[in-house]
Amino acid sequence: MKIILDKGCYRDICDAHPVPIFSQDWWLNVVAGEKDWDVLIAEEGGTFLAAMPFTLKKIGLFPVVKMPELTPWLNIWLNYPEESKYATRLAFEKEILMTLIPHLPQTCRFHQKYHYSLTNWLPFYWCGFKQTTRYSYVLDELDDVERAFMNFKKNSRYDIRKAEKQVDVQAIDDIDVFLYLNHLSFEYRHKKASYSDVLVKTLDEACRQKSCRKILIAKDAQSRIHAGLYLVWDEYSVYYLMGGSDPKLRESNANSLLIWEAIKFAASIQRAFDFEGSMIEPIERFFRSFGPRQIAYFSIQKNRFPFSLLEALR
Image (cartoon, rainbow, N blue to C red; front, side, top):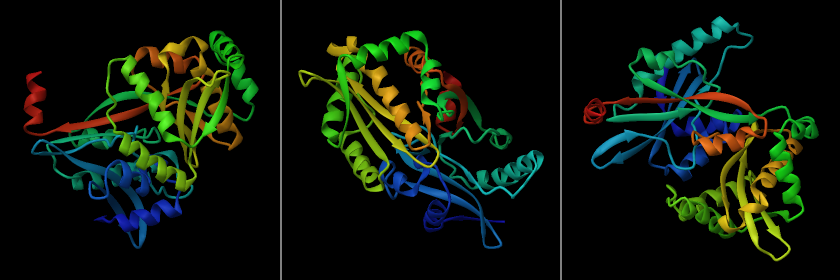
């Protein structure tokens, strides 16, 4: 088995296989920068067996592997043997990951979150990494959206019906309108977004060209915009990437209606709906009220000097 660093080969993999959107080469070019990401590829006999993208940044003078902005997780693409038994798949994962991991950059800090399709982090453990479990929420049985609606908590169904009487949901193309709402949400929480407007606009243009984004807003009869959300999708799911709302108009419950419309959109294109989860309790409670399935995924870390020293001193 040969391990190579080759973005060209990875682009071929992305073109030929359903790689999730957050690990597509064009997405990484935007959110990480074309020079600040790379990919390890396992190849044998002219066949690509696996691909592990990663992003390289610096914290001060120290090189680190970290998650790019606006990217909830990355995906390790694995080309499993056809018709393999579960034990065979686990053996394949172990062989591939134990081969790939030593070729990762020896940076001062490594931190990557991986898509929930990766259920086996043991090879990372055996190589000295640590992991924290995080959670996403996914609605993946949307063949009957009305049945899905009845699985919402009673309060959520009430909020949606209430919002339907006050606002209309519209799809727009104006990213500045969405960013205004996004800013209002951060200001209300006395926080600043970790991403810039320039990055959002660049990503929006890339997604628009790929026809994989939708901006929804809730607007009332007085033309006041109550809330908005930003969706992206791939061959698997529609993802709730960003949201925003006017704190002065929160009583309309427009956010609940927007999510309901987003779920119906996901069903219309035969995708699951991924809330992207949250470890913040009030947001987690809100997402959970829509009846999704809780799915665990891994946040994997490893520190070397000086970050290992800082970790030990905590």
